[in-house]
Image (cartoon, rainbow, N blue to C red; front, side, top):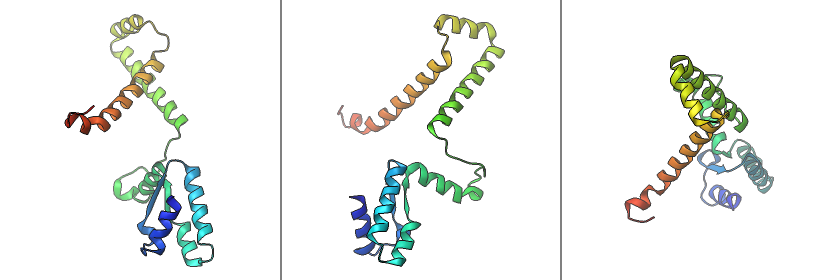
Length: 153
């Protein structure tokens, strides 16, 4: 469906590939879409060249490319990179451990009492789960806000 719509924008409506942004959910889907577009325009060398540099990617890929282009102007660290899910989890655990270490160093007795009261040897994992749950709930609340305003559930 996306390939057909994209093709119609180029052929019927005379859009340039640089004016179209196609977002997919996965890198595999983006690569598949580009391959199908390349096949569709295989006999048109100019369009085929344009398809190679077309904006067909995931939202993460698009944002990473945009950030890379605007690093200097946006004050973005040149070492900027998108974390994969594993790297993100590792970084979250590292930050939580560091925060707990700081808490214990600054308020040792209170922190140890809290940890003892919680009775869990996996406090960092539990904190990460709670954090993820709160982020997810806030996201759902934001999506549902217009419904509540109109009196719907």
